[in-house]
Image (cartoon, rainbow, N blue to C red; front, side, top):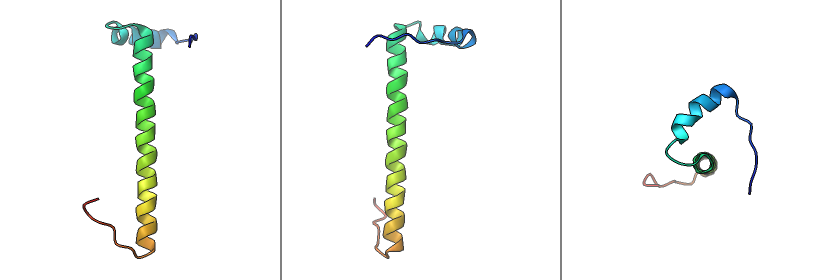
Amino acid sequence: MRTTIMIKPGMAKLLKPLAASKKLSAFIHQCLEEHFAAQAKQETEKQLAEAYERANQEGRAVSKEF
């Protein structure tokens, strides 16, 4: 997919040195992958915490090894 993005001049100055070792599209792709992976991890941790809380409220023991 090809797309055009607008980057503010101040942000572009910060971006150039970071993306110098690879193409800008590869750099942006890497950033997006890391962002979505972090979001998925955060959602998984939230769901796990909610499941632990439900188990605790129901009086079920949760393994400490978990």
